[in-house]
Amino acid sequence: MLQFSIRCHPSVPVTTDELEEWLELQLEKLRDDAPNATMRLSRVTQGLPSGSVEVGWLIEFEVPDAERAVTDRHLTEILTDMRLLGFQPTVLAPVDLPAAAHLA
Image (cartoon, rainbow, N blue to C red):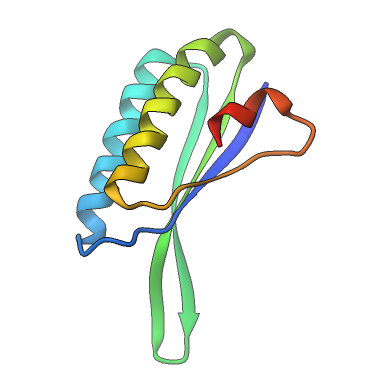
């Protein structure tokens, strides 16, 4: 099973809701093609004395080996789009998973 996360820190003047809607749409497409994979989208906030500030998202993945091929293709496209849209994605994976290195 492949386990990794993607941290997104948007750097564009677009509302958080619009960006999150795009992320959710991408995850829906992935879930359709990889129904046994687990994908979680969480907002990341930073607590400040003046209140909380939204700083991005964390997307967590657990992909069974049988669904890796289809998710690899989708994730490569999604990461490219994230970079173009200004999400500044960072792939976080365990050090002992060299097979996930192509996603970074």
